[in-house]
Amino acid sequence: MAYDFVTRTSYPTYFSEYFYELFRSPLSSKYNQLYLKKWQNIFLKAEKETKNQIVRLEKNKEDLNDYGQIFQKNIHFPNFTMTLNFHITPLISIVKDSQIPIQHLNINHVKNKVLPIEWSPTFDWKEYTKDSTPIFMTIFAFDDDYLLLLDGNHRLTAATKS
Image 1 (cartoon, rainbow, N blue to C red):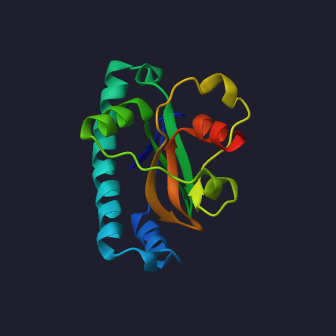
Image 2: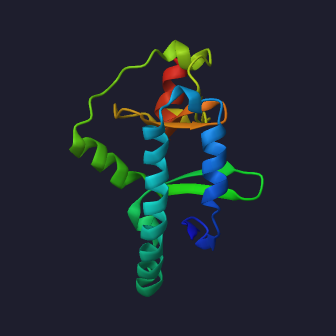
């Protein structure tokens, strides 16, 4: 069972359809089976964890805003839409604790749309770009993009404007 944390509604997922689409993606040939299997495992584990989280949320009547900003990405399939969503604050902590090395990207590749990245430029970027926190992206091969921006829309927008 999948759960939309923003609307607090559950919906069915059809993992077989998702994995069929993922494996036939034109970008799939660029990535080995290990990459695809890892995402498959992540989604299957997430489904199990989601059930536990729903029980805890309903039992404790927790306010989801207490956890900070929620990342949300709708992924459309022929027969259903899946919502990839999670809290960004714990993600940032996990990345910082794991000491993943920072990689620099050429901002001109973003400006010129050479870098196949899924992100949403913002109009209110000036008031949110006061820190130098890196942007957070992951490889997520789907449709024409293979990078998914998880955190940093305002910072990336600011970088493309300068």
